[in-house]
Length: 103
Image (cartoon, rainbow, N blue to C red):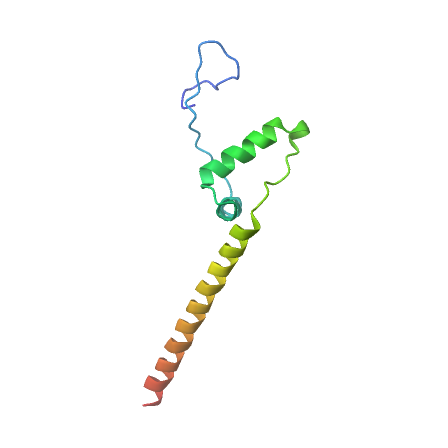
């Protein structure tokens, strides 16, 4: 990677650094990040595992990794709590603004 010629698998004298710069749509990045969080893995670990499964699966048809129910439940609970906090702060802000506006 980085040279003027493309790297070829199995090409003698070439070694791969293990680093790859990859551009992808923001929506795919967000979905991968959400799935890696749900799986309790870093984004890098998740993508490497997904690529390894895709390469080793027949016809590149790899199933999605199993997500632990406990981790998913914890992530959902955290999201709901964060949402409740944001809604409560918005409500308090709205009430304060109404009080100030009515004075």
